[in-house]
Image (tube, rainbow, N blue to C red; front, side, top):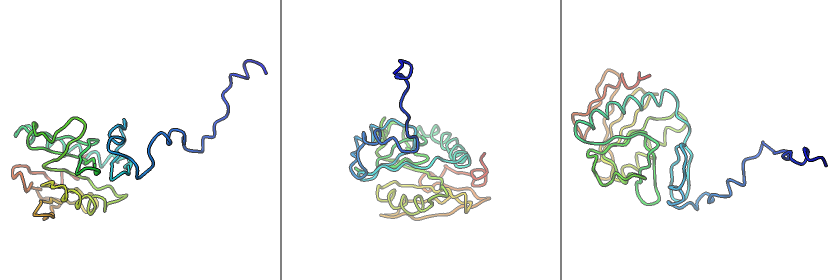
Length: 203
């Protein structure tokens, strides 16, 4: 065989996943928290009791709303020496359950729950509903954030054009819904006020 031909790479079947790479990782249901934390990726990936879930890529509108709320929360955080960050940032709700909220806030930047690899708690989290699975934010995460003792949870719903402010009352959330033309007011921080229309129209 001519030397030139021997150097040609064999054909690769491009219609199949890269199984050899996949086999480097644990099977679903067998991931440890250390396995999950060792992932080095800019994808949104959450962890729940041995299972990892890759979240869908957010839309331009979704990110515009998140960006607007981040600027509002950033101003407020600076006023009270707090800290606000945006996804991807890991929030451990309890051992074996890690979420990546769209926005995550602590009233004190020196709060020990703020750690470099992940946060172990928050005073406020914000999720902007994605149309592919609205129940994830409205039902599943509402239950989980309450179970984790997160005092306040905001759900921005572009479909209904509302901001739902949830405040922990015992083991579950009480709620106040704000629509266009209204100012959404934090139940925990009364001076934190957000214009609903400006939020929904961010772009």
